[in-house]
Length: 170
Image (cartoon, rainbow, N blue to C red; front, side, top):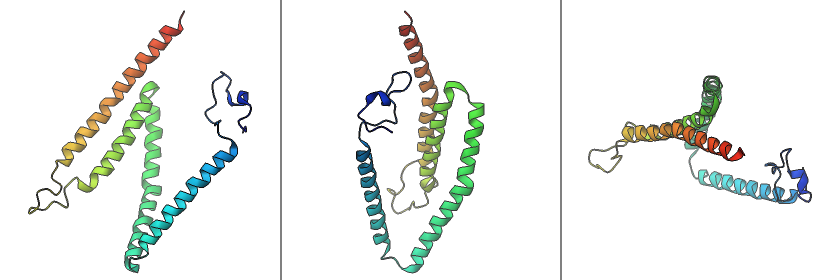
């Protein structure tokens, strides 16, 4: 790493600025890391303080819920995501891969966010304002918008690249 005094060390072979070389000196990066770590510790301590008032049986249920979440993530979601990513990377080539990957992540996020209200479990007949939206329709519209952006992104990138090539030619 460089201390920031010699700018030639921050350039790659093409003369472009190296993304890893920051203008802040090494001490500045360390101070930022320490500040972020301190904020993280304080937020964690606040969370523990909030949990302190709960009875032991609730704390045990919270711990079990968190442990099950970690196990399901590590042994179901992470391997499934890795397999899907590896397989789809082999099937989807060229410039289509980045927007498809981003759309897949956005779709998974939207679906996970919609699951709790998808079948309106908290809707009450005596209170029509509770869960008063058509959540399946909203999810469908959101997913259509996300996936319409895939060919749109590909078209924009293609046009921009063609224009850059045309400008670069003498």
